[in-house]
Amino acid sequence: MAPPPWSTAVKTGVHREKPPVQEDWWYVRCASILRKVYVYGPIGTAQLSALYGGPQDRRAKPNRAKRGSGSIARHALAQLEESGYLSKTKKGRAVTPQGRSFLDNVAHEVVKTLPKAAPKAIAEKAPTPAKEAKPEIAKEKEKEKEKERKAEVKKVPTPTKKAKPEVAKEKEKEKERKAEVKKVPTPIKEAKPEAPVKKAKPEVAKEKEKEKERKAEVKVATGKKAKPQEGKKTETPKESATKKTKKGSTTNESGQGTNDG
Image (cartoon, rainbow, N blue to C red):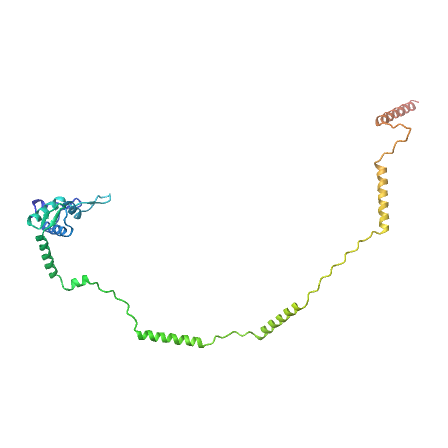
């Protein structure tokens, strides 16, 4: 296997800004592709380019997911197929028995180089430190102490409040009074006699009659006209006014004659 001549100046994808810095990056990528085919195979170039893709920086715009280089994946698969580690199928490239044994041997050698404690630490997780349980003896002592405390509390009698003698006597007296009040029958209320009607005095009645007569006389003297006598003619107001004017003229004439004489 040999890297192509353009491997020193090519980027591994659109999402990358510069080409890879490592000198042996081609061999690393071929080994990684062989491992991917071993795990996910059979697989094609489109899926491999998606696995080696990433987000593209578009400055102010939000990033977008982009695929990796497809030509790198095709050239690497072709070289691995020529070396006998991969083979073509209808669904894509798959690992050959030669390639599977090669990967298993490499993995076995890598495991030997690792420290012995490392696999155990990875396989077996360290147990979380649990809280130390109290010894059984301490628990039994605590239970005994609690029982003794409860027994002491039960033995001590609760002090009852004694009522004062004066207050007790007053309460007894009130009870006796209430009992006496209940025994005494309530008196039935008698109906009140009706008040006698006051009779008017005879003198007052006479005075009232006299007042009525006086009022009648006053009305007759002031408002009511006298009835005309039979046989005499009643004068109208116009006739009475003409008579007065005639009398006044006669008096004036008589007065003027005296002055002339």
